[in-house]
Image (tube, rainbow, N blue to C red; front, side):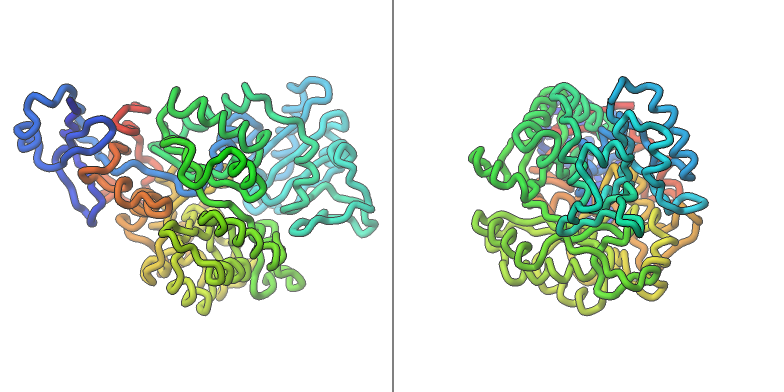
Length: 528
């Protein structure tokens, strides 16, 4: 016995503007599609439930190909700095938050972004000390590649003038050698190593809060990297498995950071294991930092910092060792690489250590590009995991980092697709807003949320291409192109239902579209 969906517009996404009248589904699978009358006749006596779309618009379920699910939950539960427009606004919010804390409790805040402030600058530990020397304080930058801490936190971590910088990290110092409280990339781990562990109850709650919000926004799944944090591989995976699918159905594809790869193996697990809703994915590696903190690794120096080309997280020989380890188990890799130099290093490793079992490697972000590198990317089997919202939030300040010529060749989403390079679309939440409609809007319009101007008009995507990133693209990168991402018989019954037709409205208004329902495996997980 199954369910008939009808009464609205149903986009199959097989081709642009391809629609059907109805879907017959059973046991979480699309059994057939076509005209409503035909399905009613063909499955007479086998339809025990009906779902009337009432004029709404149904798409294959949207999937975010790169986010941090638990990080998104933390953003919802922690002090959120992402919308604040000045250092003073941040400091005032911290001063109010301190009043709520118990003696010695950590103050954790996320999302500050000096590039959206009227007076961009980095807050100092002295300003945090003026608020509290009793509470350890840590403020994560929106890119999560930099933190600001107070003196109490530095003291607890044992950071002194003699503390050596780790490979791939930087402790920013005053001319005297004293730490300013600003730590970049791998230097953050010095602080994170002494932070109190999140309780199992709190961890589970954070997962629940995140998943509930993702479903509300029309997402049926997401590819996340959380398993090396929050108490380790086993503890974090268990938190996911206690929530999924017993409380919610949501397809979490969980990348495995190289630091916990051995933990995965010790549990006799490998790629694809973990269950339908908590599936283990590629080995996650970071190869560089981010543009905001000028730690993305570039082939040429930063325009606004000529002595700086960014920071490689790993030496080349160490990066190759990680590739060799993954390939020993025929495991794909997923590498964070923003700068073109970082991407070059990753591409060289993919060429040297190819994957031969049909699974897919991915390069996450791939923002800064050059012509020679682009040509190489067309020749290797790799998926680029892009975040369209970065265009909206990074321009115009990215032109200061790179110069106009280099920035015009970057974030080249249309060029990737036209060159035949497979792409998937994500948000990198909580770094960006997780709403997939905002990502699609940014991919189509390339309009900055900072100054309202359009950047890289030649790289705009069509509506069909933008939606495909979050449907077919996200399915392809995890080797599910044959059963996810389309409305076709044999595919999973995962649907995102909206109140408006994305193909018929102004893309600048996508942010106004409402999610009517989110269906996962044939079950309603959210309904407005």
